[in-house]
Amino acid sequence: METDGHVTIIEPKKGWVPIDLKEIWLYRELLYFMTKRDIKVRYKQTVLGGLWAIIQPAFTMIVFTLFFGRLAKIPSEGMPYPIFVYAGLLPWTYFANSVAASGNSLVGSANLITKVYFPRLIIPASASLAGLLDFFIAMIVLGVLMFHYHFVPGLAGIFLFPLLVGFTFLSALGAGLWLSALNVQYRDIRYVIPFLIQLWMFVSPVIYPVSMVREKYRWLLALNPMGGIIKAYRASILGHQPVDWFLLGVSILIILLILSSGLFYFRRMERVFADVV
Image (cartoon, rainbow, N blue to C red; front, side):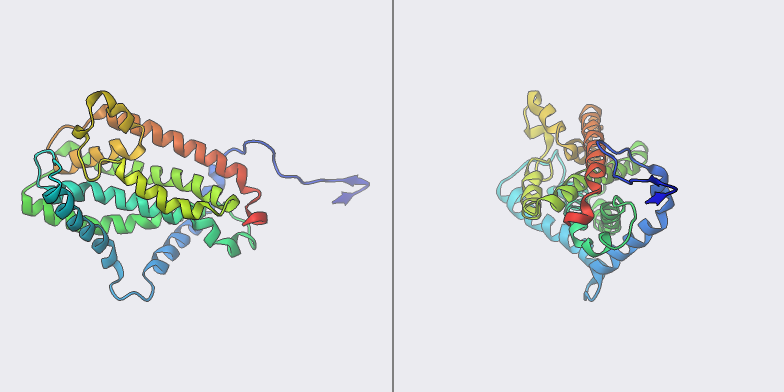
C-alpha cells in the first residue's frame, strides 16, 4: 500500500507467534456456535441420536468383560470387572473421539478457512468441546453400574472429578492441536490417527490395573498423559482406593507440556493453513 510516497508492506510474523487470548475471547460466540454445529452434525439424520454416546462405551465394556475379564482373568483391583473397565472407558472414549475429531477438523473445515478470518484454534477446540456432551450422557451407564454394585464416591472424589474432566479435555485438545496442524501439512496423518489411538489405548490402564505394571516401571506409565488420569478417575468415582497423586501429578505435567507445545506449533503453522489446506 502506497501513501504520500511511502510504501507499507504487510508481512506475517516470523518465528513463534504468541497466543492471543483476548482474540479468542472476542470470538467466544463463534466457538459456541461451532461446538453446537459439531454436535448437530454428529447426530443429524440418525435414528438413535444421543444414544450412540451410550452404545459405544457400553458395548465395548461388554466385549472387554467377556474377553479380558472372564477369559483372560485380568485383575480389576478387587472390583467387578464391568464397572472397573467402564470407569476407564468413560474418559478414554471421550479422549479418543475428541483427538480423532480435532485431528481432522482443519481439513474438514477447508472451505471455511480459505474464505474468512477467525482464530483457527477455535476449530479443534470446538471439536474437543462437542465430545463433552457424549461424555456426560455416557455417565448414565456408570451411574447405573455404581447403583448396581453399591459404589459411592467420597467427598474428595466428587470435588476432584471436575478437575479430571478439565485435564482430560486439555489432553485431548493438546494432542488434537498437534495432529490437526500436522494433518494440514502431511495428509498421511489422517491414516496415522486411528492407528495411534488404537495403540494408545493399550498402553493406557483401560483394560488392566496399574498394579499389573512393576512398581519400578510405573513412572513410564505416568509419561502417558491418560495413565494417571484414568487411574484417578477410578479412585475418585468409585472411592475404592486413594488417589495416586504422584502418578496424577506427572500426567498433569505431561498434559500441560503437550498442550503448550501444541499451542505454539499450531500458532506457528496457522499462517499457512489457508494456502495448503
